[in-house]
Amino acid sequence: MHVIDSHTGGEPTRVILDGGPDLGSGPLAERAQRLATEHIPFYHSVILEPRAQVAMVAALLVEPVDPSCVTGVIFFDADAVLGMCGHGTIGLAVTLAHLGRIGIGTHKIETPAGVVQVELSDANTVTVTNIESRRVQGKVAVRVDGLGTVTGDLAYGGNWFFIVDPSPIPVTTTNIRKLTDAAIAVREATIAAGICGENGEAVDHVIFQGTSPNEGVHSRNFVLCPDDAYDRSPCGTGSSARLACLAADGQLRPGDEIIQESVIGSSYRLSYLVGPNGGVIPTITGQAFVMSESKLIFTEHDPFKGGISPGTNTKNPD
Image 1: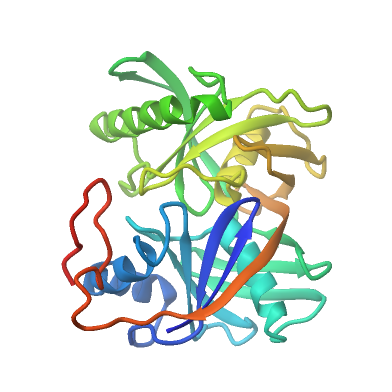
Image 2: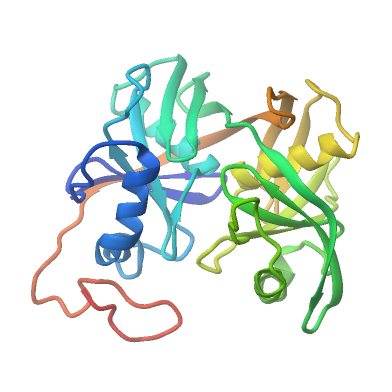
């Protein structure tokens, strides 16, 4: 399997160029559902240890339905197939440029959540115009074990987020373990309380917003992903959901730009325009860097061919 690895603000992306399963044709959302339900051993083997690491997101290239798109892509991490991935889209664009498949300028990429636009400014800098994002519920209170009552916003930016501002724990690298445990508890509490999207979509990401000591930075965030890993980048879909909340509260005007920082200090430039359906059209600018190009080998008698299950020292079933 031919892959190229990059990182966006410290968050790794593995682009799968060939060797993936046949998902058939039709809408990307349907193909993504097939990947999620019929090919779990495949995506576990690609993204779990020992071939990958906990923070990595994979980008499986597929044929787009929209002929104006340079490619279709389905993103997944160790626990879930994703509707969209902001850092992964930045990494994918830089990877496609590395391969000579796109050049400086504007291009379209099709995801299960919809068509997004990428503008490649140089070999490493990409601006993503995401799908329309929205706040679904504001100031939702939920009882969380160990934290008491936590209030947050339910918002969509290509994935489903519960955004807590301010964070119940200072957003610093020394608190990553505490932040992780607290965010897992918040996500479990929202699911148990039935806090969900209009069609019953469960919260899959949690964001804790904090302050940054760096001048000119709007805020610093901690983002929990579906596989219980934290996002090393400021999270593109999470930043999109955050922009929708800031817009809904009148805290940021269309076209105004802010800097969003991650818990490890990497940053995105963010702004938005008003969307046609009452939400916002976010733009996210970040940088990615190609790290390696390789071929993954799956030896039949390798006891860890299917990966190592999270939280255990045992092999994952093939």
